[in-house]
Amino acid sequence: MPAGRPSAPPATVPPSSAPAAAPKSTRPTRISGTWIAVLVAIVVLIFLLVFILQNGGSTTIHFLWGQFSLPLGVALLFAAIGGALLVAVVGAARILQLRRQAKRLTGRPATSSPVRSES
Image (tube, one colour):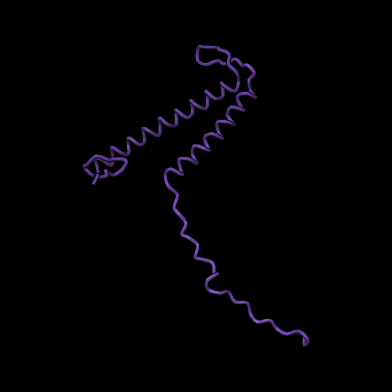
């Protein structure tokens, strides 16, 4: 410390102006998760709309014994929907298989959620 400078006393904070304890963080709810999913879906749909509008050139589609003409973006959209439906059917079949197996093992019906009693 330099010889000519007096030392300042340490700064103290009066108890009344001390910061309050931070409130506990709240847990996300199902509704907040739903809103986030809706917002993400809106963004995806906007991108999908832009994609379809930018790929409006007509193309000839040959499927099985048919032949028809569609805009390229719409044709790719139909292909994506078809793929999603195929995945959903396979997933639903697997879920039903697992539910039947759970029912056999426990001897009672398998439910997706517990029954709530109203008071």
